[in-house]
Amino acid sequence: MKVSFDLDGTAWKHRAIFIALANALQLDGHDVGVLTAHSEELRAADLRLWAARGFPEPDFFYNAEDMRQAGVVGLADMRATKIAFARRAGITCHFDDFDDFHPDEIEFVVITDAGG
View 1 (cartoon, helix red, strand yellow):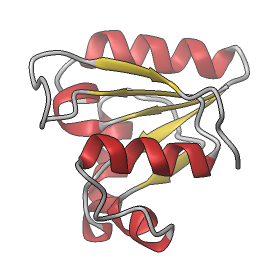
View 2: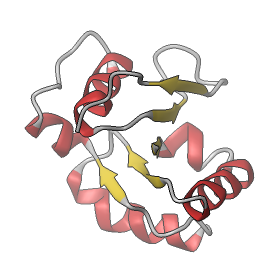
View 3: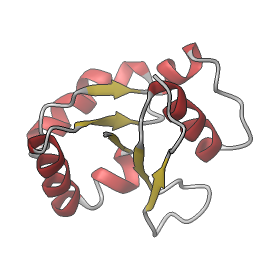
View 4: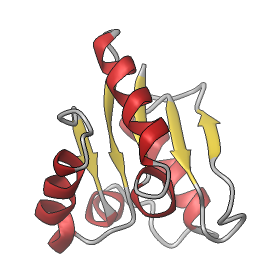
């Protein structure tokens, strides 16, 4: 599997569970990384914070610039944008709070037709 985590509202807000999950998935041979709407300018800071907070070395890191280059920006909302990008990037599972919908809940999205 290729599993991604949103940062704000998800990995940062619920660190204990997502650090444990990311480490367990990676130890089991799955690719674990980040899918965030943060700008490219925040990449280095995000990666430093990811490591400092105890997450494993990410196998991939995608942000707003990657989504723009893939041509998936400007969709109905951030949920649609991230799912469309995840599908193209071969991500099979994504955890996100999708601020636009329910900022106090985390959604687990399974992408059954992921390419990549």
